[in-house]
Structure formats: C-alpha cells, structure tokens
Length: 91
Image (cartoon, rainbow, N blue to C red; front, side):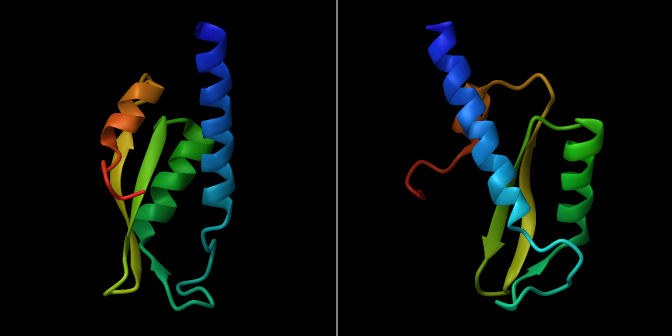
C-alpha cells in the first residue's frame, strides 16, 4: 500500500509542478489578462527554493481576473491533508 501511495504522491507533485510552471512568471498580466498577486509569486518561490510549504492551493477569481493564494500546506503535510483542503464539488 505504501508503494502505491508513493507513486500517487509523485504523480501529484509532478502535476503541481507542471501547473505552477504554466503560471505567468514576471508579467503582471498574461495574454489572457489574468493577473497574479505578488503573494502568489512570493509563496511559490518559497515553495521552490526554501521548501517552506508542501503545497499551495491557488484561487482564480474570474470576476476580478486575478490569481491569489487560498491555502498552503506545512512541509510535513500529507497527500491526505492536501486532498482534504480541496473543494468537494469544484473539480
């Protein structure tokens, strides 16, 4: 069971990395007009460089065309902790 969990966790971490790489890096607005808050950029860099967080959940406010940080996970957080933070009927 632990091996299966590890494979799922690695796949999840890879998908998060891929998603984060698609976020605009240095631009205030991407081609879509969606802006990214400075807090998003700062928290992502802390996750990437300092391993301050296990995960970051971003929120897209379509009305304001803005991406913000909704939740972060401590370094010791598990995959179950992450999935518990996700909205039940939003994906």
